[in-house]
Amino acid sequence: MTRIGIISDIHAHLEGLNLALAFLEEQAVDEIWCAGDLVDRGEDGNDVVQRIRYAQIPTVQGNHDYTARRTQEQFKHDMTMMEFLEEYPDVSDHTKHMLFSFELSEINLTYLDYLPPSLKFERGDLVIEMTHASTFDRVTYIYPTSRRDILNQTIDSSIADLVILGHTHRPMKIYRDGVLRVINSGSVYMNYGMPTQSCGILTLPEREFTVYDLETKKAAPVPIVQLESKQS
Ligand SMILES: [Mn+2]
Image 1 (cartoon, rainbow, N blue to C red):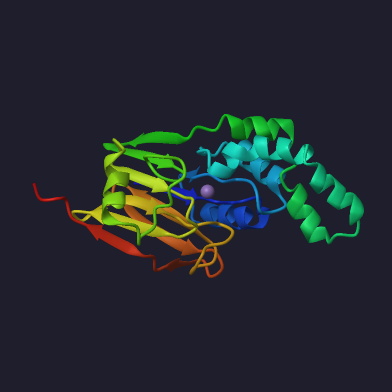
Image 2 (cartoon, rainbow, N blue to C red):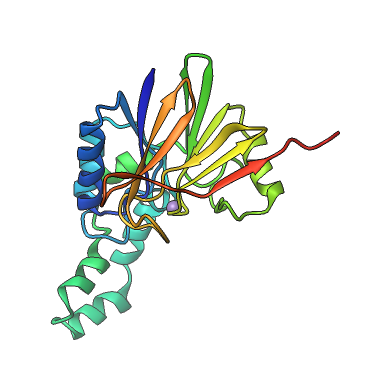
């Protein structure tokens, strides 16, 4: 039996990342994988990227990781922003941190640039694909409430037996014909809904997936979708 800790959407919040890593260490998982979006929104972009780098956690490139270098370059040349800061030097620390949160070191930017959009793992007889948004593009949000054909497309666009997604900040489990096919562990820093902070543990070869509330350290109920193969 292998237990894999799944984390996602850290968005420059070191506290959330540390909480998740401490919890998964406590749970003695065999591996930890990350479904992307290490940066933007929070203040700890450099610390988060460095922690993931040093721990050598297999990570895919989220949309925020993909645009990090461009965002930073644009900001440097954004005269309105620079003038704004000159004009209002006493802007709150929080706002300043938000504006400067994408000041990432060159080595961290390079790390983000070279993250793969998708990773495939083989564990026993199972192939598992991890990607940030969807299996067919890099932007679409896959929700439990998404149209059924979109959910089916998510499964059929991958050769994998099981797909791991992030991006929505909403944990979910999608089954087709009673078999677990798509999972999302939610965000370690802020979910839209309950639990507010979460990570997951995937157990193989059983294909069991449990989402944990990082505040209570307890298993959390998550939306489940049951699909049926199309009748031919
Ligand atoms: Mn995202």
